[in-house]
Image (cartoon, rainbow, N blue to C red):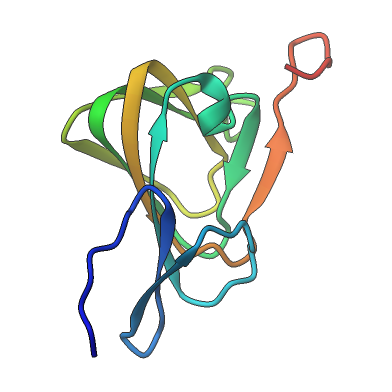
Length: 135
């Protein structure tokens, strides 16, 4: 087997249940088997789908800020929790998003982000303003 460098910012890394790791082109396939490691440069809000919530019902997700400064938001879980939970991440820090918890990212400055999760069943939902209009 030939070992070669992998451009993490251009590839998705797939870790399957049998212990194999392969690099491939990025895909948004939520039904893909195995874990996915994704690294990306985020320069503007659109690079982190700032207008959307995301959820992974099959597994937790680790979100790490490798370079820069980001905010990870968790959507309120019930009527007793009114405010979004904000977690500030700086270079070299990470947070674990609980399984089934809607979340989103906002940038404070351009950042490099690394995320690992099991994508099976993942969904994205448009964020709404208080008046019900799309952000």
